[in-house]
Length: 515
Ligand code: HEM
Image (cartoon, rainbow, N blue to C red; front, side):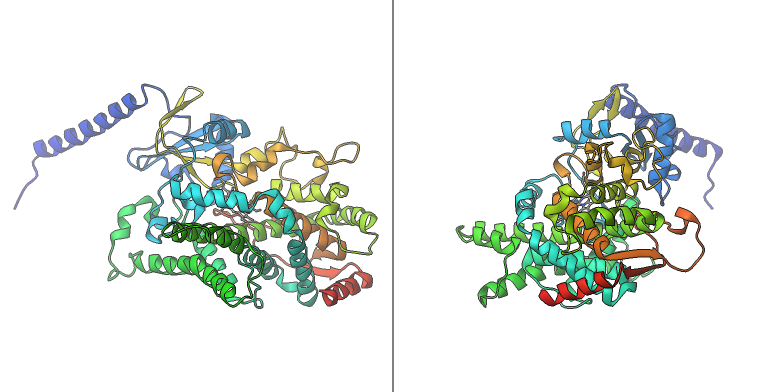
């Protein structure tokens, strides 16, 4: 029987220690003696794995930034994760040094599901640049202005649905934002609450939320797990990868097939797909096929990235309105003065509705829907304020820390739209609020659409409805907890939605008949 002698054990220990020392020296040389940004002390091998909670990690980062400073670093299995906790550092790095801070991290689950076509996950490549250019062009303010009537119609349909079935708020919001993306993107009119195209993008968004962030599933930390074969069912990621790939392909291709069919049979409705496909007609093959692929990727990403974020953010508005019912009354007085209760508000009314606008701004500050944004990655080594940030580092913006800074926003955890109102009653603009849409070359291309949609839904709702607390114990803001994973949304809550009065009810019915 082989015996491991004391000397050979010592030999192994010496070997491991020398290897570890070699790594430390190499790391020191690589960063030219400069320190990494501060953070909790890493443990051997696992680094800071135990310092990064799976839930509500933005709260822990905010806490740590108070002692360590606004740029933090963590080390997990050899990867450096940098968390930016201030607007200044986020601007300095992601915007001013955008050439080297605009990549996305390699995420094993994303690779396995072949989701690199989704613009949000695409690496900083020529293929990303092409799709991104198309999105920026298609979602610029002038185009969004042209789609205002569509936005308003969708908001009015939402009112009708809420009147008929007020208990299904979340489903109606999802339906509204999903049907808006599909109408704008492809000229597709959704068919009822269980429309297959809305469901496909909802399923994809759900799976993305559950799996696509670094650390969200074990395979993202231990990439070798992706090779475990299917005959080890408890451990293999392959069935999940296949499912993710299939629903991804459905969102990527099905709506484009629909547009092509409607072009052929002459029933195509105005849409971003139609506009862009018409442009490609001038091209020769293979350029045309490639251009069509870019359109499919860009619009599939729009559908995916725009539906859940906007719907979830709107859900937070309803929680805020429950917590401070008097805010509804103030906003309604402002709305009534503008519309005289003779019509529904429009996006053009916005400049005369500063308080309603302030409500929208405060909701997004109070409960940012993706509190850690979408991770960026560096393509070069860099030095910031004396700290070393290596090539390949994952860089995240802690939106929560920025938008809950008690100096900028006193009592940051309270929902207070008044903070955005100047003493003369006008709206106080706040450039820091764009934080919710990210920074630099990767800033959300759908921000103008999201902003207009948010406003018109809130204004339309408040002009005809009230939301009131449902039954159950009232524990203040604790009655309405939010989820703590990548996308932070209100947990299910009880409420009652009722028309403000008989006049409001008649108005909703009359408006629906006119459509
Ligand atoms: C409340 C609504 C929304 C919020 C809070 C939001 C937030 C964000 C954030 C934080 C990012 C990452 C930015 C970065 O990496 O620095 C992002 C990216 C993106 N968003 Fe939005 N978004 C919203 C609505 C929309 C809408 C309506 C669309 C489409 C119409 C959209 C399309 C996208 C796309 C395609 C990306 C990926 C951009 C890239 O990687 O180049 N988003 N969004």
